[in-house]
Every structure is written in structure tokens, then in C-alpha cells.
Amino acid sequence: MRKETDNFTQVANRVAWVTIILNVVLALGKLLAGILAHSSAMISDAVHSASDIFSTFIVMIGIKMAGKSKDKEHPYGHERMECVAAVVLSVVLLITGLGIGAGALKTILSGNYEELVIPGIPALIAAIVSIVIKEAMYWYTRLHAKRIDSAALMADAWHHRSDAFSSIGALIGILGARMGFPVMDAVASLVIFIFIAKAAFDIFKDAMDKMVDHACDEETQEAIRKCILQNKEVQGIDLLRTRVFGNKIYVDLEIQVDGTYSLQKAHGIAEEVHDAIENNFDKVKHIMVHVNPAE
Image (cartoon, rainbow, N blue to C red):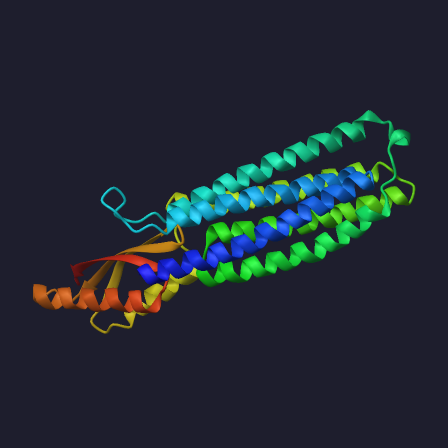
């Protein structure tokens, strides 16, 4: 278990540092391009990329805390700290989006479109480069998040995807402004806010589901049920209850066996069921099996 936790942390940290370095380069590049090309959309996009750096540090802290071994005060481990990191990440993402959206709305409502400066070519180039790099970062982070089953890392992956979408919005806005519609640059910033807010909501909802003992999906529950019934000594299932704890699953189970069996034999059947579930479902961390006499 210790080795598995160490590998989880190493993979997550490696991915995090790669994305931090790329985000630093992107944020500085987009900010410079936005200033030189007089593009509010590109500056907004640069702020979004800068928030990615901060959010990735939050992910790293959450994963480090989630990887700590169980102790006397936390007998079930620290897996939920990853969900806490994801919640913080969603809030940071939303605050970033609100700042961008408020600035864009102020520009749109001002009505002084003739005074707006047309964005230059550097902003166009920066937007295209950002789309390619951020989409690549999304797939890279998503691949490793699925590999180690990390909610916080997956949230960070979607943060990258939202940044790619925001760069697409910036590109459209810059093109529109250069075609004679200066307000399109501000409209693009508003669209960027919508993408960011949607990503923040999805991350928050997923993290909260895992923090409030949400049941695992129906497909997994049905697979567990079939696994239990493969044991010929099990005559029925009185209760099958699951809950997601961080990125792990806990199972509470009541099975029926022949009422004439001795306590030792009934206990042996419970052990067989326990081991079968544990060996077939990697995400299952804890199983409680109670045996009832069949009627």
C-alpha cells in the first residue's frame, strides 16, 4: 500500500511540475502579446493561465495530504483531502472567471466601441499557440489522472481544457475585432468567463459528490453484486451499500447463507466474499460483510 501511494504521488507531482512550467511560459507569453497587441481578451486569457499555476500548486498540496498513511485520528486515511483540493480549485477558478467577466461586461455596457483599440497580430499568434499547447496539456494530465484515479488531477486537466476553450474564444474575438467589430474582443472575454464558470461548477459538483458519501455508479454496484453471487454458498443479498470516499469505494454488505451452518463455516464464506470483491475491484478499500441465516 505504501509503494502504491508513493507511485501515486510521484506521478501526480511529475505531471504537476510539467504543467506548471508550461503555464508560466504561456501566461507570460500571452500577457506580453496582449499588451503589445492591445487585446483585452488575450490579457484575460493570460490571467486564466496564471490561475492555472496557482491551482496546480493546490492540487499538489491536496495529493500530498491525501497520500498520507492512516493514523489514530484518521483511521480511514486522508483520501478526502484530494476532494478538498478540488473544491478550492473550483473556487479559485470561479473567482478568476468572475474578474474576467466583470471587466468584459463593463466594456460592453460602456458603449464606447469607437474608442477600443484593434488587437494586433501578436495576439492572434498567441491565441493559436495557446490552443494547441493547452489542449495537449489537457490530454497529458487526463491520461495520468485516469491512470492513478486522481480527482484533483482530473480537475486540473479540465482546468487546462477550459483554458483551451477560452483561447478559442479569444481567437474568435480578436479576429472579429480585426474585421471591424472592436467590441468582439470584450465579447470573447465574456464567453471565456462562461467556459470558466462551467468548468468550476463541474469540478465542485464532482468533488462534493465524493465528500458526502455518494454511492458509486450503478454499473459498479451491479458488477459487485454479480461477483458476490458467484459464490455458490451465498443464497441471497439482503443489503449492498456503497459509498465513495475520495477516490476509493467502501462496501457494506449483508448476505444470506444456510442457517444450519456453524459460525466458523459462515465466517469462512464471509471471508471468501470479502476477498473476491477486494481482488476484483481495485478501487474498493474497505468491505464489511454481515452474514444472515437464509429463511
